[in-house]
Amino acid sequence: MTSSLFALFEQSGVSAELMKIAGKVSAGERITTMEGELLFRDASLPFLAVLADHVRHRINGKQVFYNRNIHLEPTNICVNHCAFCSYRRKKGEEGCWEFGIDELVKMAESHALSGITEIHIVGGVHPDRDVYFYADLIREIKKIVPTVQIKAFTAVEIDAMCRFASLGIREGLILLQEAGLVSLPGGGAEIFDETLRAKICPDKTDSEGWLNIHRTAHKLGIPTNSTMLYGLLEGYSHRIDHLNRLRTLQDETGGFNAFIPLKFRHYNNRFSYVAEQTTVEDLKNYAVSRIFLDNIPHLKAYWPMIGKQVAQLSLAFGVDDLDGTIDDTTKIYSMAGSEEQSPAATTGQLVDMIRGAGFVPVERDTLYNVIRST
Image 1: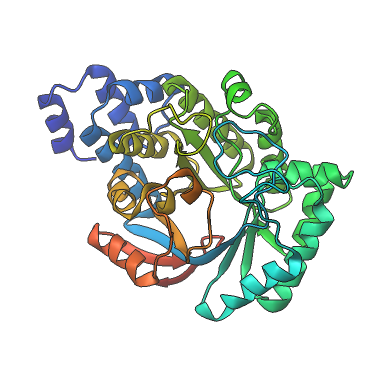
Image 2 (image 1 turned 90 degrees about the vertical axis):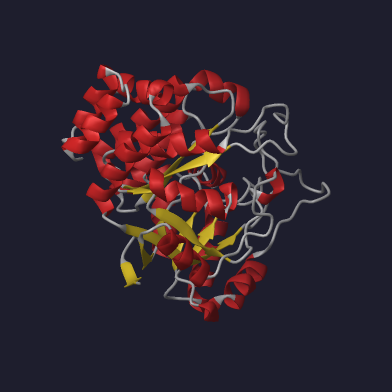
């Protein structure tokens, strides 16, 4: 950061405490949890944008990543009872689905010629499907699209499918890895604070369980993503606590590829009375996350959740990844009332979004290997 920017901050009446944080960020130093909370509470949006952009530029320059991907959602039947979920259905309930392996393979095959490089698989925790079922699913998909990378199953799904098969987490992950799994998504983290978690997802894998599953994956050479559900009962201290637990595990393993803040959407769930966060709060959350998570290389804006316009705007607040084309293959957020009810984007649209914001579009694979830079 230039001295002229510091002078501008001072002239604008930025507090000494915030100026100290700006100095640390400029020098590449880590900020504390207390400083992270201060940024959430007191920093203006322009101030946060400058700091987050500085961190993003230090890590990724002007590059913004995207990929060609689809989602497969095997089932929305789930044994858990998360109060914020608009997706879950009971077996036999109207609106439920449970696709078999043959059906899922046909879905993957129908996209095989579209140039996809990733298949993202997540869904409900089905009571009758264990880790052997999902290992078979991966193997069958790889027969049809052998070069596509498979990123699949949240820690919550991994926990359950291994228990259903009476296998330990490590053994279950090895089975999936040998079948062709290359990465885990970051879902199921929600918010790590145990008191809040008991209110919003009481029967889901607990915080330490989620972190341990990702730790185990990292030690097996399986990189993962990480997430945080925000805008539902939590305060800034809870958000920073969550980010700090991720940062601490990343210090230990280095296995997180990306962090994705996930905005609570209130349609059709038990927290429908909770007002959704504003766009200003969305952008603040991206910026503070980028500044605080100095050791996680990528910050992703999941455009099906927040809409393409806000996703493009987020690139000015530290975001360097817009996810992928998706091709209208996910229902998790559309069922909760997201901005994108039929989420699909062409590579041209993603490239235009990135270029229009002044950045360099880079197509990547699941593991952030560069396919092409445009």
